[in-house]
Image (cartoon, rainbow, N blue to C red):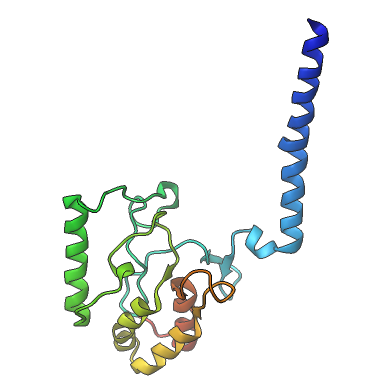
Length: 192
């Protein structure tokens, strides 16, 4: 029996060292060497080198002078420890009521009759840092009013911060809310 047990124990120990220690350390070292910013969370820092967020995780912005992110179902809004969708199906009355309330409020604010889907729906994780260019443009008038600048200038900042499809064909164009709001603050620091 020992002759059969020994190879099994040796293989478990070998694969534990190989796949549980050597492989993770190798991948971590490779990532740190080749892509240090991404490996460390794509952190965004202010002028004093303080971390203000990540380009990969959405944040709540509620002030009028900022682009607002898409709604979040993660905990109490953008709570990374409660990341998940609401798991409400399309026929759920609670989901329909929330979407209708959000849509009515956005229509009243902007005067728009047609809204981009991401303006009223949450992402699967609830932490999506991006919005569509259409949703960003829909907010441009509010941001311009709050900052005391013209809408065309806000549009230029949005356009400059619009990311295209990956490799030109994967995904949709998108606007990172945190990076765009930081660009607005850099050009027009008197945000409200």
